Length: 526
Image (cartoon, rainbow, N blue to C red; front, side, top):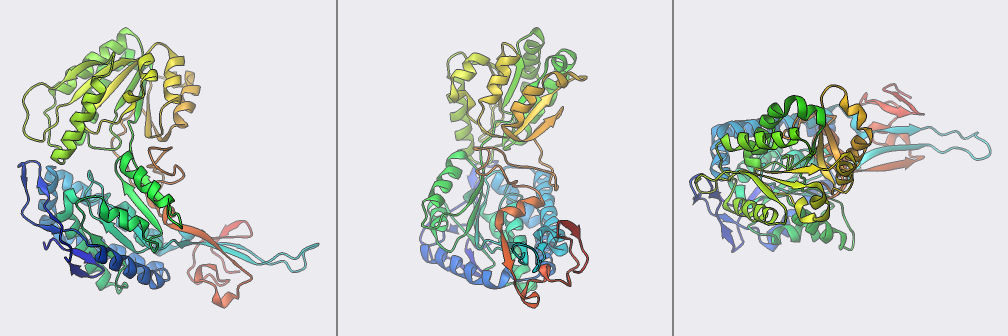
């Protein structure tokens, strides 16, 4: 542990601003002093990445796969050192650290498998027809190519899976884009360890210097300089609406605007239908008390909004949920600033007119531990007061009591974009709510049936994104192998000599990948 920046494969600490990470469980600073990257170091990292791109973009899928798998191996080789650092910077338990490490390694290996095979490049070939009347048809061939250097912002709540070697980084490297990570200041030590693993893997597999850099930052200045740098071609971000929107606006004002793929806020509405409330409100209440408090509520998929139609059963559910959530022992938040934000946003919501607190953990808690809260409000008040839509990042949820189905559907239709939506249904009652389901589908990226939104499976079918402000581009996912499509663009070759074409598009199909030839998917030669 050096506290320095990785500028390509070299450690550097030329800046004059320093900071330390914080152990929220012990309520004390960790010992390592980190040096924030200077403007010169930022420029050097970007210049190296731009130079590396000229080579890295043409490296074969199999070599990139070797690179990604070696990163995974090097992360595992860090063993307990990484786990201990993770826990010391987050207040999270060892089991969570190991679980997230497993997810990180799994993501890297899934992208390795993807690029080793090669069909993801969507090679498409339309052959020439010189005798076509009245105009001859040209030979047109298309594939996906990488955008260029990508800046990835580490996420506060996932020091491994959404940060230094997380999904954004793995996808960008798989696509052929060098990555510059703006390390999150809350877990800079975890970031440095993982960065060392990536740099070792790059050296072992012969990747160009500058394919990866890791820059320390205690504030917003490093990130701002990276986003406006003309050599940077795309940005990946996981965090708050305020932070993501600021980066989006900054990128849009550039002389050459670039895409910002930001995964931001979500309150993840849960609709409990009447029959389900009638038959199992106690069971649902217990399940959701656990979901709301899981990981101290520090997930972007935390169920922050629960909706139902007014009834005795809904009242019973609220009472059961309130009873169950108070039984759960509070746990540590990631940082004093995270707890401060939780308390401030919670207070902002509960102070609104006609909001009723139904459960609030009142007992004294340790420093940086969160006290879980449930509130209730009428549908009319929720519709009229947009402050009630605020994401409270932590163990908090709001139950909205709707007058009828029409009001319930109106609330859904007027929600901001969300990552997830959930329907809790018994028997076949959901068949009677097709317009409600359609309204929910229009506002979310993933819809869940009789489950909880917490937990994001890493698989090809997963969509982790949604209409703004859940994400800045609802056409893409931030999780799963399809997230690679954020870092590429389609490119066509017209009447290009076969021998000069990329191997993916050559007649002989030397990579033996599946391609679309004259409208038919095949791996045969032409």
